[in-house]
Amino acid sequence: MITPGISFLGRTVVSAGSLYFGTVCLARFATRSGISLPPWILLLGATSSLPIGFALRILYVGIVVVDKLQEWVPALRPLLRANDSVTYDIMLKLMDRFNNGYPGDGLAEIVAEFGSCFNLHVMFEDVIFTVEPSHIKTILASEFENYVKGDKFRHSMSSVLGTGVFNSDGEMWKFHRSMTRPFFSHDRISHFNTFDRYAEDAITQMKARFRAGYPVDFQDLMSRFTLDSATEFLFGNCVHSLSAGLPYPHNISTTEALTGKAKIAQDFAQAFADAQTIIAQRPRKSWVWPLFEIFKDATAAPMQIVNSFIDPILKEAIAKKQSHTSGKKNVDDDDTTLLDQLVQMTTDPVVLKDEILNILIAGRDTTAGTLTVALYLLSTHPHVMTRLREEVMTKVGPTDRPTYDNIREMKYLRAVINETMRVFSPVPFNVRESVKASTLPATSPLDKPIYVPPKTSVSYSVFLMHRRKDLWGPDADEFDPDRFLDERLHKYLTPKPFIFLPFNAGPRICLGQQFAYNEMSFMLIRLLQSFSSITLHPEAQHPDTLPPADWAQAEGRKSREQFWPKAHLTMYAHGGLWVRMTEAENAD
Image (cartoon, helix red, strand yellow):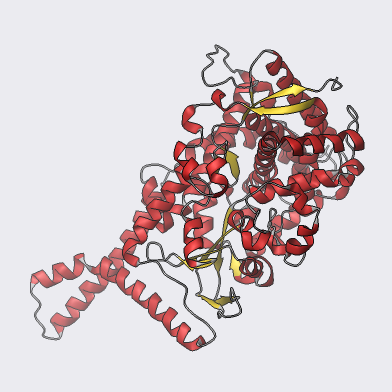
């Protein structure tokens, strides 16, 4: 198998060979013209052809950009550029802060110094970064056709996401979108049988562990709950990750060994997370990321585990479709899965797998991450926990199963979920690539529009935008669900709806948005019916995964955070979220 690094070097060799061939042709032409060149000039020309060609390319791109700027002047202005001599250092610092810091570290400081939009110009390439709502609206909605995932993003993600809906553009994206849209209908997303079955299993295991005197890693539990729910909902084959049992604190030794389905489930979940971490790190290494994977494709090992679980399911679904005994299923049938629907449109196993994995990431990881952070925020804001539990008791009762109408009526529950996703965005960072030259709106009445060259990466952060005090008020760092219910809603969000984008926006807006709201609402209601209080127990996790001591000297939320938020493609808690809960007296 050809690794990303070998492929990258191969392309470089081809380019170098072309330049070398051109050098030789020029030398022969000079000889035939009677010009005698000493051997050292030929050697120098051959060995320096690649760097000279690279330099000429950079110069050409720069000239084109300057010419365009002159053409558009005075309507446009160039973005602030970092000093080219330190761009590699910037890349290394951002990578280090991504791995070891708080989300947005490094970028937040640049925003504070230079404004809401700037050009890092990393590794000789323009990388525009913005946290401006009008820019994000332009990228996602008003100029949607001009801002695509692009070749660079697709190449870095393809070993995991393939050509699925989150890693495709144009007709391929439309095809994937059309395959999945019918399945997320109102009737289907309001069926709560799957949620109830796995929520009951998860809560039962929590109670047993608490009664045994141990805390629980709530993030691990929610990852299992959402994975089991998603795999059954999407393709009718539950991965049974809850059957693997709950982990113990890091300092508790256990002789329990996983076997059978439990081992498969554990391996699948871990491999799926590992693969996402790898592809999330690739773009942060700029266009040279393949050089970090010279000897192996870093995603190959985890994806082999993922594929070993997915492939048999796909083969079975395709075989049923091709069998004369299986009739065509209707998307409205209660027992029809997304995979049943997909095989009616294609039996290409690659297309099917790509789409399933893309939807699985969206349907599982974002929901598990948001539920984890929601519980963390409830534990650190007991008055919110008390008020939310009162709403649960009033609208649903201590034991009844919540219905779709119950959830729709629970305004404070919706506010808690929205505020959780505002403070800790499920997908904190994203990127698009411009197709042709364009502009982004001016950031203030005194400024001019910003020129965006063609084929330029434009990265944006919903995470940082959601915490801007000029957009959300002076208390933007604080967790306060009432901001979605009181006068602040009409002061800040109503006039500028693009300041709140937990599910993206425009044509690519999340199809499973209401499904996610329903699943998170259902689980939170069941939890608050079962437990009356929550306390954090960080001593149960490994000390290396706790917030570093020097965070206490930082500004804003970072200085008082009691867990370590991190992100691969989505937000998660580094080392988990270990908690204890008090059982409600009327829970049984």
